[in-house]
Image (cartoon, rainbow, N blue to C red):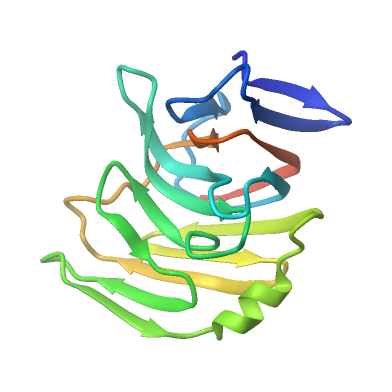
Length: 191
């Protein structure tokens, strides 16, 4: 918890040269394990343009060592290459590359088709300001939007390796000094 605080009404995670972050840190929501939902929040990130990294875990699980694994809506400072992708933390890796629509078949074949132009995603991102992240999870369909622009979609038919429900968590990625903030977090569950 030493990495987490509230500053100016925003949940804030920070690592510094004096307090380095050598392992990913997570703040786990204790309000349930949503399955089908829409999550909307505001975020911003500060630090090294190439290395500052964070994310929002969803439909995830906590391992015994405290690491949160499962789907992640990725955040990075520069906006590329991680920013806006769907990542499977400690699982299948980059399952939904940014600017693509993706299908993962039942026999774990990955098909990625270019969709939203990458330039449109990059110009939607306010590097030093607040940005809106919208995460939609419904059945085997996952979608991310940043500031209204769709960044990634995945149809995950790989039932053996996917999660239909799970925890929500905010991430501070290990690495150089950085600060990431989250606010105005809202969830709507579909039953």
